[in-house]
Image 1: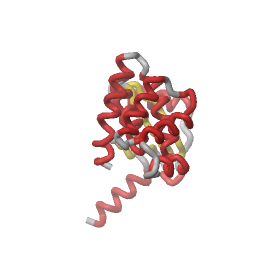
Image 2: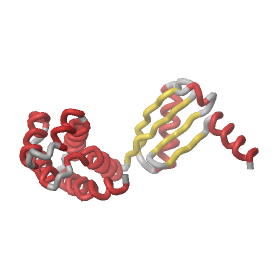
Image 3: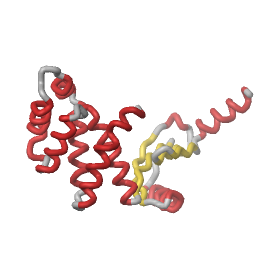
Image 4: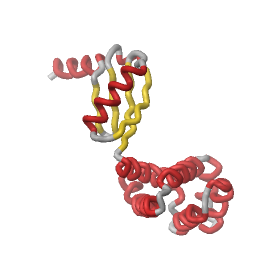
Length: 178
């Protein structure tokens, strides 16, 4: 995984710097998201791995599948990525681009899993507290998991706050074992 990130980083940075310079972060994020989805398709995977196709043919096929969703700069980006045989890295490139975009915009996606449904007032209060703690704009994605028994588990990037009853029981069991 770290190797894929290392290979994808220069492409993601180049795309981010171009998009930022031309105030097109949202457009490029959408374009890279589409490119990542297309590259993960089983049929497209076979095309991208086909040894008999040249990099130009792979890029052209890829762009044809995406239709008019790519502007000229995006098409050029796909050609450069293809020339270096990195089209399979597009999901990683898109993920890194979105990380750079979130850092620039001072925002973060936060996954909140709770044992019971949170009403809008609870979600707003939680978003406000997390926004103050993380010093970023918070976008909540709320899910329910009855297996938590009670409480919530919050994931923001690599920060995890486990306030669930299941998590506390697991900690207690671990403490009793030692």
